[in-house]
Length: 124
Image (tube, rainbow, N blue to C red; front, top):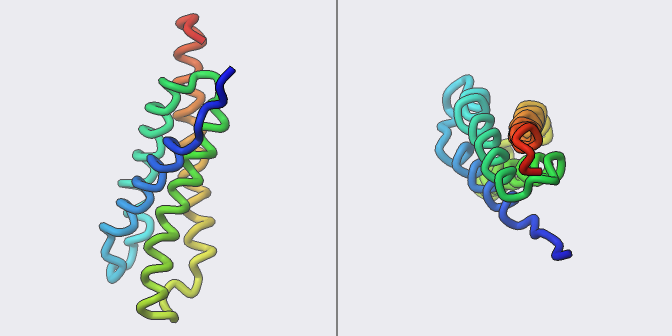
């Protein structure tokens, strides 16, 4: 049996995380939450649904890999901002924890939703 690659879910999650963070204007007060609830959470849900279509028997792993990718995408913006201004994002571990607390459950819901659909349909 061929081992399936984890590269696609990680790259898809990284794209969602980077898009959500790079397009956000952090001069606004609720920019982090707006980015999480309007871009990253629906994107992670959609990505795990899409990945679940191709990797039916690994719902938890799919959710974890997409969430890891979203965190890597968030880190890309954080590190870029810290290169320009080292005092920015001085609480970035909390940004990542808030992001993980929102994205991870949504990813698991999407992964097990598509897994349940395939299980009920008998396509597992």
